[in-house]
Length: 443
Ligand code: PHE
Image 1 (cartoon, helix red, strand yellow):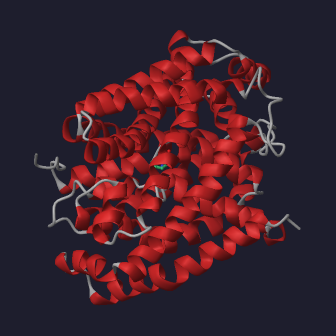
Image 2 (cartoon, rainbow, N blue to C red):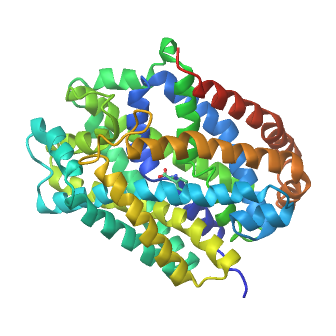
């Protein structure tokens, strides 16, 4: 059987950017930045994304294309030995992320439904309570979890070109334009400037080791690195496509979207007197408050949540695709069977995640709820460790193969040398340093 391929270079870039841009940018980025005190965190996040993020994205894509295999097969066929463990860890990471991704994806569907019903525009004071009650409910979020997961399943069964590529192509430009409109409203709210300052002004006294670990994890999460994702999508890409330039595009689009989300959410948080450190509910509580203040708010609410659902879907689809690609390539399962089986399993874990915001919120390990455990384990531990393996693998074990993929696209030798330096030395050193210090108790 010949391997599926992207329809075009643009299709590949948009699908990869579609994977990168999702709940990471619009949901996670604002609240993690809020939790970590704003500006200084933003700077560290940008610095990591533009150096390590860029180099590792190129590396993942080059590895995938060189092998033409799933995440596990890539490590096995290019070198073998113990390396495929990193591939298995990547597949596991995608599975664990899916359990909470689809829970939060479900919240976006629920808010879309509320927006269509006109219920989002309740009086401001109640927004936080309302959101809290909704996610704590033992039943309602599960319906939306199921809806979101099943849509993900159908798109993945549709396959690479028809399902994933088409979806990304059309909605992303619309999303960017909408974000610009929303920034206009958010920044002109009375009191918004203190939020802008919080977001942009770096206060280095707030920098701590846990913060840098958070920045590393969030950077990988929102660029879809350290989960075998870019390896998998890279395995579907034609040899002529310039991987360096494609990575630059994906990173620019993904960082752009995170930055825009921060510009919308944080100024509004301050304008309405919410707490920037209130955690995962931040976007869901703040955005409706912005819509209440807008002419045509009801319309913008529907549009925003519709686009957020779509952004989340292009990412959840990529997460499921990593696992499905592995099951098809390694276990020779059919696409439909692989996708359906996996979806049923992560939905079960998703129920536990959903309940950890309500009836199971007292079920904790090391003081963390089930959601917080899964989030910390994947984003702050597994993804950095997998990226460390990718860096060592691409930089040392099979550098010639990575280099060949880049010379094939006539990437400027200076850039190749720069990427080699980043992958070989800087990435492993920084990741190890951040992991070790992040695990020590914070000052
Ligand atoms: N980057 C995605 C987001 O920000 C999440 C993701 C992580 C997708 C890892 C694929 C792999 O929403």
